[in-house]
Image (cartoon, rainbow, N blue to C red; front, top):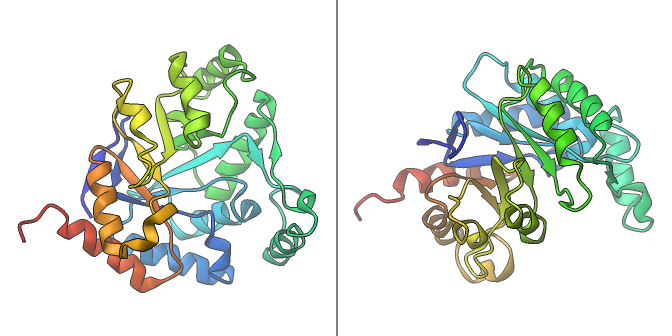
Length: 266
């Protein structure tokens, strides 16, 4: 895949990024690592993760799949944490998620935007990822009214050797209040978008380029085939990267193929 410099950062990322929220469904830890390696072979160079994903398992798989010396970039998050912590095995994770369908407390994310908790989370993420530095740290669906911005900015400044770039991740309702007050934490915005609702237009309405977007296979997307949706997403987000995910190796190849063909004369 082609790479693009993510606006307002020093990161060069593939036009499609791989999201790891559902990576635990791929199978064993070995299968997850192999799947991530297959994504990289198809040209994915940016991977989106969080301590919440697989209750720490997605970060561990990424750490085992890729060394810090290669060209893979990683975004992880703080603010939403797995119930029971990040040291659970795959069996415990799946059991919690299954039981959580009947008793939500077992699988519901813990919300904590205290800087001290973020500091602890960063330490854990670096250890699981096997890295000395996070390419992009995102606040995971924060509340602009409740966030202690000055405290966060002070902490991030102290962590500049371990955090290259910072931003927020969340849907339109989360993002808009940060844009309205021009919050300095929004160096990067990762937000939901779709071909039908065009939610990410809230960025261009305030003169900001698209950076990281996701969500194109929701809504009425089933009325289009996969290639049409992917091409439409690339046409929507021309300046950044689109987060996608799949358990299928063939689907990984399709993402790469659509990206290569996008914009070429027919």
